[in-house]
Picture 1 (cartoon, rainbow, N blue to C red):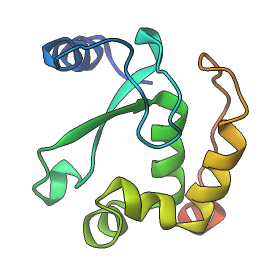
Picture 2: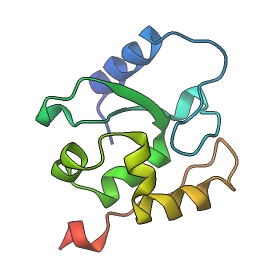
Picture 3: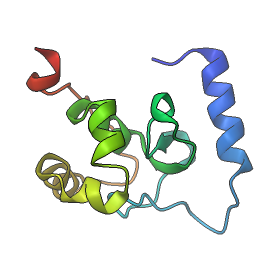
Picture 4: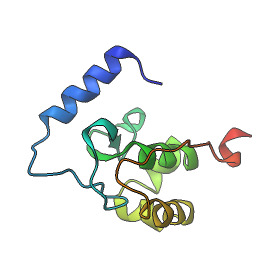
Length: 114
C-alpha cells in the first residue's frame, strides 16, 4: 500500500501527462480507468531510469511480482521485452479477457519469495 504523499506525487505525474482520450495500457491493450493507473519505470529508478509508462495497476503489480529490478534493468526494459517473458505473456493473455476495471490479488512468484 502506498502512502498519502506518494499517491499524491503519482497523481501529479499522471496529471502532467498529455491526455488524448482514454489511456490504453501498453501491456494488455485495454483502457485504463483513472483510479487504476500506475506509472511504471521501464528501467527502475534505482538503476537510473526516468521514462515511465502508464499501466493498469494489476499489470504493474504482476511485473514486479515476477521480475527483480536487476532483471527489469538488464533484460526487460521495453514493453516488447516484457511481453516476450513467458510469465508476463500468460498473464496478459488471461487479463485481456477481464473488464477494464478488474483488479485482483497479485502474489510474488516463489522464485522471488524464497
